[in-house]
Amino acid sequence: MEGDWCPERVVILEFPSKENAKEFLGDTEAQPLFSIRHKSTTSKLILAEGCS
Image 1 (cartoon, rainbow, N blue to C red):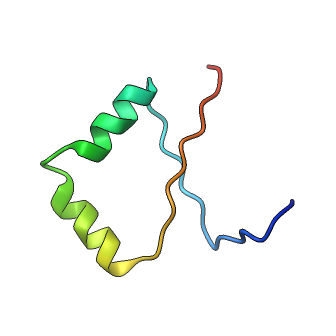
Image 2 (cartoon, rainbow, N blue to C red):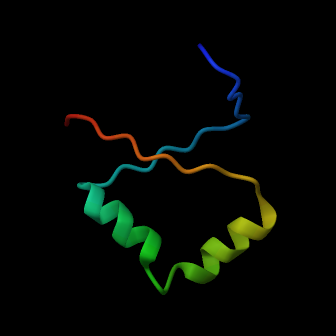
């Protein structure tokens, strides 16, 4: 509603904790998939903490 960020798509992944999210991004088995994403898209990752 404010600012100039106007994404075409938003994908939300939910993790039990901030640490789990960081572990996911650091997973060596997932790195080849992340590499494909980096080569084929322009993306921004944000971490939003909230209550459950």
